[in-house]
Length: 288
Image (cartoon, rainbow, N blue to C red; front, side, top):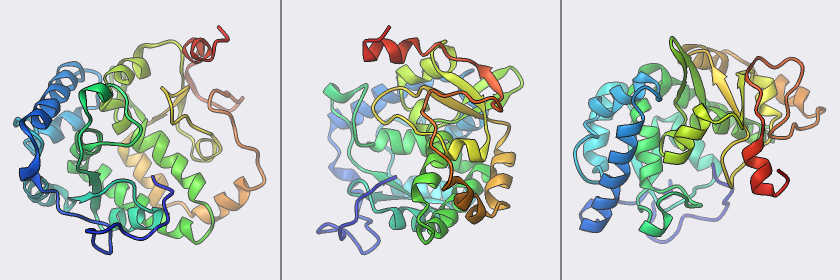
């Protein structure tokens, strides 16, 4: 989610959309997509929620090369009424929320370079499309994303964007989900990252805690490295229910009087799947 406030850049429409210009991608850029796709597709089965892998098949994303948004949107529209639109980069919050509320997912059109293969600051097309779009073919998750967008438009008028951003971060970007045989990945920031796809499930360092809406919206997050805490939802149906049926305004008012929690904090009420050692974060900070 973005914090930009300026007007659309030259060449962009009033809603910040731009042509994807799919024909402009070079063979090298298509090869980068194929490399990233093959690496994740080989590693994710058995780790990612099954609905994600089903989305890859429904949307025919296993075809080589960077997807054409027009073709992708046609299949997605048939599945859940969503479409993918290109934007020049990060967009203002109100633009982002309005697109989601109208079942449009905004995606950057550039792809990372070989030097950025494992880390880049601004989301690229692989993160946005491979990471996010397959689950938009799942009706319940697609409805959750629309409900989140509508909630964002309301939060904008309540001065609560930061609180709601944490819900997006800890679910859509870095969420885990309970499954019959253990925890699975579903957040786009994880499933588009080779390293974090392993770290989030296997490493003893991070906390893995049960989803709690109020607790989550009090919790800071990291934008510069792997997360120190992941939240585990029970199901997409429960996530949608809590988002669509909750009046967030009283929650925002309640949380305004409570202190934020550090990203590694565990509180008494937490449902703990894993009490993290935080060894990874301590080592990176030089405090191991």
